[in-house]
Image (cartoon, rainbow, N blue to C red; front, side, top):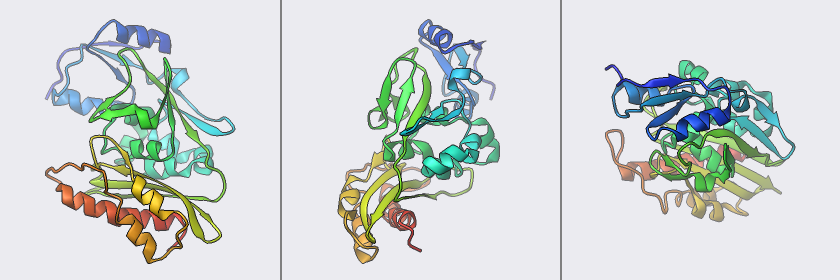
Length: 280
């Protein structure tokens, strides 16, 4: 299907882009376009103006800033996967980005675009939530825990543009894993689990777990996180992970019913936690 007619501009700065967006309530931002273009082709959205921010220098690059890594919003998934800075300082981001769709999409789709799109079935929102990332816009800084408010909705205002993401460095002793269940390599996750685990003296000292596609927004498995503290890697870990789906509202659709997603969340959380903790 052919998209509806729209105007197109390529601003030279974030300020120009914000001004273009603020002047048109039906304008949309485009960078890699891997989420927006399918919606345009299916006529599920009707923007009157597309504001192309994909080449803005302010949205580019991966920067080590001491206690955190700053990832520009227009950095592609492929660049995230190949970045030595990200692999060394926040490997969970690279692990999850490597599972996004297929190579063609990863070479065009952007890190910031995946977050701004706010799809709970996307892989990166749950990672940002688990790592307590901070999303930096043209106006303010928003913790990931406050950024996602509903299905495909974020707290960003009209005219506000995502510039980049601050990902805290967790330091030594942490292990990471992203576990994902999907029908095909290109499909959205039916359920995904982002796990960060810190071990001390052979037991789990701390765990952070973000869940993909278990509600209208990405969620933290808080109950499981609390139950994992001070546990050795044994049957007690499986029992703690059995609580991963508590306080979630997974959807039922053509791909899976809600109760199946709850079961997957338990199983995948156990796998992700064990892998992050370094247990075979």
